[in-house]
Amino acid sequence: MNTPTAYHQLGQFVVSFQQLEESVNNLLELLSNADSEVVRILVNELEYSKRLKTADVLFARFVDLRTNTEPSSKAEFHELIIELEKLGERRNELVHSRYYRWITVHGCEGLLRTNSKLRGKKGEREETEEELQPEAFNADLSRLNVAANNLEAFRLKVIDWLYPL
View 1 (cartoon, rainbow, N blue to C red):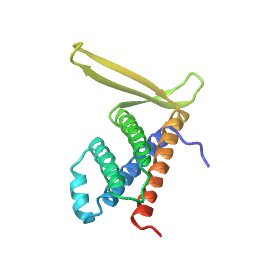
View 2: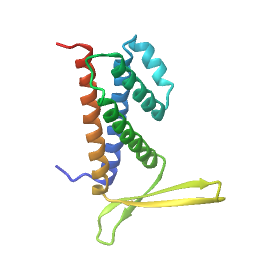
View 3: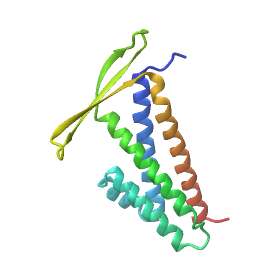
View 4: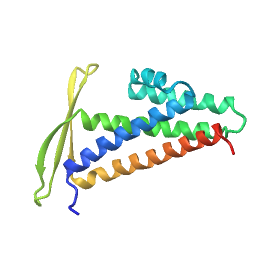
């Protein structure tokens, strides 16, 4: 198998993030315990950060309304929501940047990511730059994987609570 390039890793991050977003949507549908199409229609109108806040509140309410749940799971779920928010911020950084082909002095090909933000209060434009070799994405991809696994664990927990044996 070929070693992944920075282009490949960037694409892997974007696709993995989309799958994570879909997992959040699935959990919202499960927690609402309502007509799935109605939930999808409503969720479709929410930006990612609003979906996370909604999931956080729905999960806490779900736990509070049932007697077979673990109240401590609310805090654990909230911590996951914070991590999902951070991953969303990283996704926005990566997606809303400009990229240039970049080759190190050692001949390794990567990407040079640039992004600019307007700082109205300071009256200036702030330019950031990040050098991305393929391995630079490993930590982001690992965080996405851990978050996706944790989200799946909560989904399975909700199913267990909804349909106890």
